[in-house]
Amino acid sequence: MKSFEVTGKFWLPHAPEKKYWGQLMFSPGSGVEVIIEGNLVSEKRRPPVLVGTLYGQLYNGAICSIFDVACGVETYYAGEQLHQTRCDARSMIDGIHCLSPAECKLENIQVKLTQLNRWFEPPYEVNPGEEENQSDELTFNPSELVCEIEFRGVKVKLSSFSRKWYGEIKSEGKNLNWNYDLVMQADSVHGLDWYFDLLSEVRKLFVFLIGAGVFVLRFIGGVSPRSHVTLYYPATVPRALRYDADQFSTRFEQNKEALRFLIPNWFAKSDSLRVVFDSYSELLCSDGTSPMTLLIRTIQTLEHFYGIIWGQGEKYVAKGTYKQFLKWIGENLPSELESIKLEEMKKLHEVKSLLLSRFGNLNDISLRSKLEKFISELPRFITETIFKDTFKDADHIKKFLDQLEATRHYHTHYDPKLKPKTFNEDTLEEVALVMWALLSYWLSVTLHADIELARDIAEKAKEVMFLVGRTEKL
Image (cartoon, rainbow, N blue to C red; front, side, top):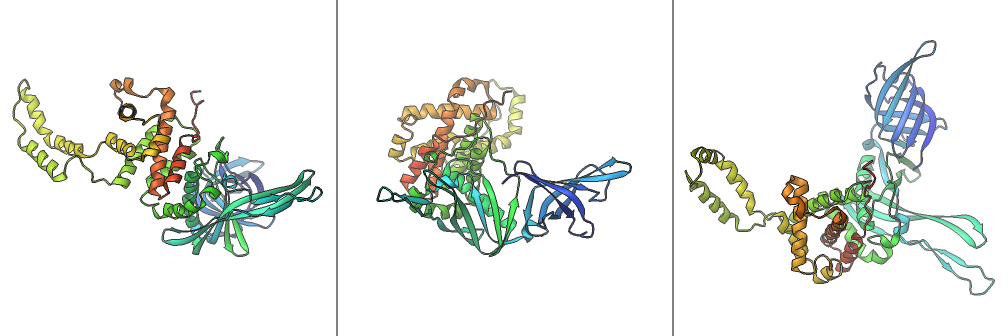
């Protein structure tokens, strides 16, 4: 998407007789803005007035619908009192008038993602001429992704589409330009808002598959076989992205057989893995963060993930046994203790119920035990290849967990006594990448990736490029 400015007439859907000239401006980083000559909302006040949807017809005759519009009216004098309405909006769609995204019915959508061209292979093959003066033969042979998924109970066909066009003919040969898009076709017509949610889920999938922040550059909706609309929305691509395909977590041609199972599983497990998917995507797409934030959020995600993989019912001792133990403590709490004042003993009995309720949580598996299980359950060859320096033996694992636990507790609950036991700042990013690789491995396994693919994804995760802010001190 590119920035543009265009003039046209604009009006509220319930008042088509009142059309106003105005200037429509769009910038991918800030969204849609309309400056209207006149008082659109008939209210002389500066605070924004929410008007919902705004219709427009541009100077070239094209129509558009602008959604979630907030307007403010300004008054100025030029020989007489005049008004100007400034409108800000979240999104706009061209080619159709509809009151809301839900009422804009689409048969399919076609989108362009930032790294998609490099995730696929170039869609052509060059066959050198057999004789010296014979021209090379250029064959268009694009990669083809076709996958059936299910989103909110609706079957969707997810496929790739490659467009080609020739540029100028250069002395060294033809200059072939090309582009890959993704096409999503549901088995029935759905509103723009439904397709928007589907695209959001597909984007998170490709953040995982590529191992970097992925952003939508173009969104085209199919209203009918011969009618299409374009959605404009305030998407911002960060200042730096990883485009080196050799560093991607997966590549289509190398992993296409495994992906035929992994991609449907992503959508089948989207409800249970919602927190994990969101954390994974948000951290990779964050434009400037800190190693500590990455580490704490990854640990938090693993703690949640533990319950999905191994269940929340795991206890140190049987639940019934521990319940009886707590009952015994409550019934046998002494009325006096040596060297303890009676006033303090009275306070102890007053908070007995509160203390016993807190004691009840002590039978739950601790954070350290959960993290230790993520490590101990790794296949040996994964430990020896990807984590060999960190988890080489029991002593190294214990030392790593001691520091990890202290670092997490210090930055979550603050205890100055823990500070000397934490990782120093110089090693935080390395530690965060180790935990990120651990999360990536177990997420791959949960999605039923084969062991080789899970290993490759975890290995690439140790080298992932987060957009870590280093200049925010100023």
